[in-house]
Image (cartoon, one colour):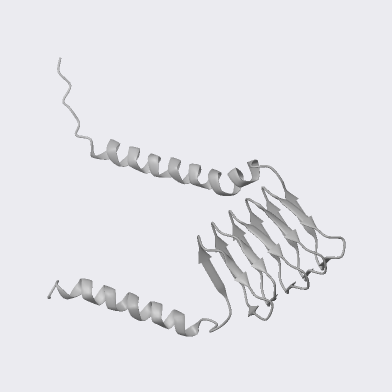
Length: 166
């Protein structure tokens, strides 16, 4: 068997896999960014909006959820979010006449909303940074401890035994 073709076959498989996933995805309007803010203009329409280490400002309409990790969410006047609005780490602001059909939830931030803003679901605020640690930090600590346990076990099993001298 020609072993030089294996890496090429693996790369080809992943290229085909990723292109098939992209073909099946909603051609649409979902927006995802990492480190670059997302602005949905007054005449724009978007599906689900997800942002990592950035902020989202909605002036138009989203047909899905808006989720931000370590950034803020602002829903401006007469903007509409058909799903839920969730923020991890900063906060959410709903201007007057903003409309959210689902729930508004923030972990480690605050929800500020105008009295004229419309919220179809519940408002949930988990203020304080302890929630961020419980959601993101604690699983990393447990995962690190699990890896350390595996490394300790492998070292113990592979350590050569020394004969006992009298």
